[in-house]
Image 1: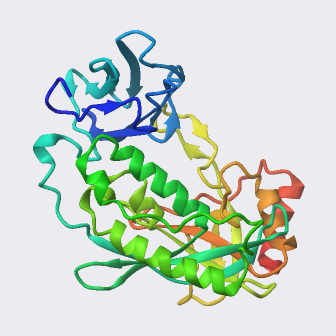
Image 2: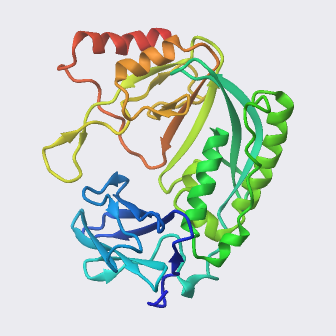
Length: 360
């Protein structure tokens, strides 16, 4: 790029993803992400994983030479800059409180060879199926094991659909757009039309599983690919949390679901917001087995519970034929459990809490 720090991307690079991470003056960590398609010009930004209002728009080679998107988070104020770079290219920068923030994807030329070997190794060790609670159709899942590279110890096990691998591949390639390490990316097994092959056929699934295992091993051996924002969450690891998933074949699941109370707003004292996830594990029948008390119920059949009402979560688990697949998030730090339901809950919600104790 013209500034010597950021690799320029051309309009022919496909969607580009850039992420910047920094700490504000109060010590709070933040993440800013930009999504931009140089050819169409479509753009959007996220601040701390929420859409930045006013960031949706168009920045193409047919528009002005520079676009500036202001943002605020915590005590910090900053700007995202999309800069035309030559006739067919763009470069990107993030400035926070007057200082340029380095890209989290480590695509700066000066640091191109300094990334260490990824801490984790991903493998695909098997496959299974469950019933989608939304449409009661079968889903094929691939078992992704994430190991600590140094010790070989298991960090977590998550289940992903083939479409999840496709989305990961697209995200990593977008993050590496314009970088020479993109050529080191492994290839996914080819998509096959359902009209020509049965995607539930055991031989087809086993062959695809083998190819995905090779893909996961190779991808997690490329430092710049592991540094892309989408990679670690796909493999179930984050700085302060682990995601894992379990397949349940029996009607009784062996744990009690509790309804999470509102959370304190990180921005305004005395203000409460809806919880990130409405349901959590309140009690378990077997203390040594997963899930564990306090873990968050994050997905049902691979679909996020964030926007679901607690009542709908209970009903989905009750009425979905088995097997059913559930995802959980375990926080690594000692956060307190979500507060118990308060006295303002209506009768139906309160009954659902008790009903979950019986059925689940």
